[in-house]
Amino acid sequence: MANTILIGSQWGDEGKGKIIDVITTEHQWVVRYQGGNNAGHTVEIGEERHVLHLLPSGILREGCRCVIGNGVVIDPAALKKEIDEVEARGYGTRDRLFVSDRAHVIMPYHRLIDEYREGAAAAKDKIGTTKRGIGPSYADKAARVGLRMGDMRLADFAERVRQKVEENNVILQALGAPLLSADEVAAEYQALADALIPYIQDTVTLLNEADRRGESILFEGAQGVMLDIDYGTYPYVTSSNATAGGACTGSGIPPHRIERVIGVVKGYTTRVGEGPFPTELHDASGEALRKAGHEFGATTGRPRRCGWFDAVVARYSAMVNGIDFWALTKMDVLDDQPVIKVCVAYEYEGQRYEQVPGAITVLEGCVPVYEELPGWQCTTSTCTCFADLPDQAKAYIARLEELTGVPVGIVSVGPRRDATFVVESVYAPQA
Ligand code: GDP
Ligand code: IMO
Ligand code: MG
Image (cartoon, rainbow, N blue to C red):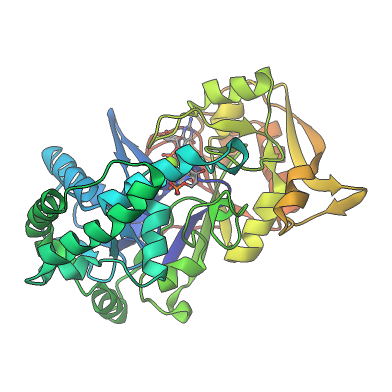
């Protein structure tokens, strides 16, 4: 069984949680390696619906061991809440959840800085963040002034927290945000430390030892390539590497140990937050996709912006991540469309672009070049294998494969575990 990276190939919310849940049966470990509780990964099992923010989706498979790696930023209160929630639903965490001692801690001032910076920004400069403190926490990591989960074990942890709060109150004051009580935050974080210390480990060694024993690891990407801090639509991005490379730096597993990269891609495109989105639909058809796909943020509840499939983005994702095959999700959402459009390239000032341009000013002006394909106008959610799909859906998939140069190995036609099938010539799961 192969060590596998699974990433989002658009702007997030492609259905990563669902696909992770399905393929976890092939892996002993599931690892989150970047991002934080800005993510919202939905897993539906029968009538139960779970939305995971920090916990790897493998937590819903008994026996699967889960790691929150060094590349993640952790809001300890959010983590504690999520642990309590899954425990209450009958999923044990104590012996199978491991939190990296190197992962950085999100502090209350990070959340306030995130919120007040966004609030103060001019409309065109707003990023539309989740206000979870992600950016400010990664900024402190890069500036080498952050606190790490391992610091929770130190005898003077509360004193360190107190000091950080006092330092950051100066920034909060400048932003017009409420100041924090150093004593209150220190007490709150000490209590959270006491609850979380049993989970904190050297996960770099833990994972490498597991790899050496031949156990297989699934890396659960959060966000998507277009939100990656280097490859996305900067500055309208998140603050980590959501692309495949992030799995190595965010876990400590070396690149040559990765055998497979799966890209999750929706049959159309969505985005939450601000920033360019060439195939966005501002008319009734965008609204129809939002309604059919229930496109509302799993973390913030915001309506997701919707548009046609962008093959330029998918091609770019395939290049940057080295995608071996696609997990194509939400095909059922297109069931009612009489005509389905696919963006095959962009045009900007008379020039054709087959790849995503680096300059945001160019991307903002790009006009999609569309190709139209006939819709199938029948239900796909009851299909249980590739052969069941209507011919137009098969043709749509074939065209996406051609345009991106990557085969489709998994097809998803509904939110539940069982509404998934594989294309065996591309991906043959092992028990
Ligand atoms: P993630 O962040 O990539 O894990 O995706 P989200 O959970 O934020 O959003 C995906 C949404 O689509 C969730 O509500 C899923 O339950 C749902 N979903 C996943 N796959 C499918 C599918 O094939 N069809 C439909 N209709 N819904 C799906
Ligand atoms: P999953 O893992 C979709 C977006 C926010 C905003 C930008 C920066 O569920 O796919 P941040 O709070 O990270 O500083 O916000 O990134 N964003 C997501 N959009 N899915 C996500 O995660 C996201 N995580 C962050 O909306 O535009
Ligand atoms: Mg999501």
